[in-house]
Image (cartoon, rainbow, N blue to C red; front, top):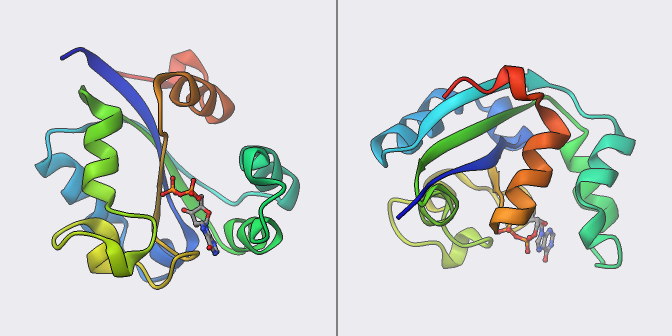
Length: 140
Ligand code: IDP
């Protein structure tokens, strides 16, 4: 399997509860390397653009407000099959459906406030990484 890069976001519900280190440990234990990371506070406009693909979904407004409510940690994870591996470590969108031991099973508060985001395909990973990071910030 090829080495890939994926965009991860530790969401406001998790930064608020000081869970960044525990979540990063899950990534590292799974063989994912954090090759870039920064803590930022998104504006509503930045959150809205990032989640534009969901703009017609009923939860779009709520999602953008949540993502802009408190700081997030944006990061790039690298590893063998990193996109799928990260999705596996994250667990299902709804924590009630997430497998035991996954980040969302252990930490997520609800389907909306679910602690982490992870890119879902190579094309979206490339777009999402470029949204937050310049090439110079990626140190593999
Ligand atoms: P994913 O984050 O597991 O890829 P998506 O379906 O792409 O899930 O949804 C993006 C984000 O939108 C979710 O992580 C969650 O924060 C939010 N979301 C998804 N479904 C709902 C919902 O039914 N109510 C509220 N928020 C939702």
